[in-house]
Image 1: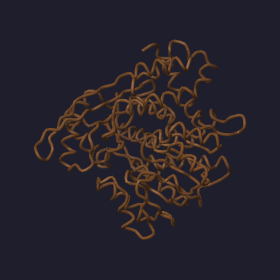
Image 2: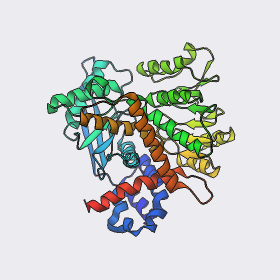
Image 3: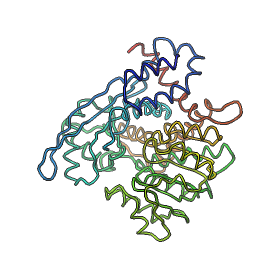
Image 4: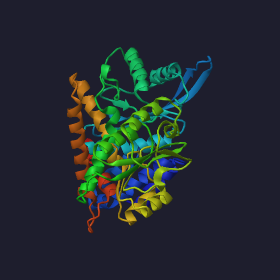
Length: 445
């Protein structure tokens, strides 16, 4: 495997796709030595194939706003890899959505899904549509138009989308309703559904819960626990909400959440009432966290800043890609952070990861840490196939065990000679092996 040649070719084929190229380089750098030690992976251009999506679909999404004006957005579905199962990955509705971001997410999803050990391939999709400030009827009309094209490409045994940023229970409901009407069938084609029509318990909390279960395993390698630790979180959506719930349950003190407008500092630790209020903030569609400081005493809003400047034992990026940069990482290290776990996708820049590794801070990458969301989506698919629902306790226990297994795999392949655990390397190799072996077995397709 010649990394420089592969990256040069990728850059030539994908000009301007910064996020995708970043994700590909991060994976390939960490698996290079392993691949070259196992010649079978260099045969038949396996690496060149694994970085190329099987299919990338773009389409027009026209819809009518409440003023009767026609609006046009662009829709996408990147079906990246189906070697181990149907394409599986979320739909993101956000103005930043473009092909580069969705290819990066689909590429990461391929290895993340592999780590869960569930039979799911990797995919991602969405639109540059912004649900912020839109009425329910506008969101419904957009979702119906979006699904009127997407339905041709998905199915319970082909491609099973889920939610992501900007796509919650409301959007999934509208999308599912339109799919059911167009196909005249009731199938588990989307995950993150409401409980009355095939959803799974703890799905909204799953990404956050899973991230904290993984972090608990990281601490256990040092003979430590979450009890009494101070944690800084970014974001205030489902991911951050689920993480805050589980951290509080396990005895940690959450001192920050954040939004595009800044972050709130909660020196005494987040309360149950504040965690519940996070749901109100999200439902408001205003995409700001400053109202929390007005709602609760002892909460300070810091405008235009990110939460990585506070002193904490643990840092959890929970919002969006590249939200924690090299300077943020240096500040966290200076302020005594001991563990960093990405619950967002590629939440840290390469420079930040380099700082953490250099200072021997245990760092958990998103593809391992945030796999709990897609894991419970996989469990939802299983329940749909059985026409049956597990209890909350059953789903949570299965999720917890999946996260323990993912951590064990990352430790197996990521432990270095000095005992330091490089979770990035470990997760990438563990995720790669299953997908690569399946691709070899299935031939040049």
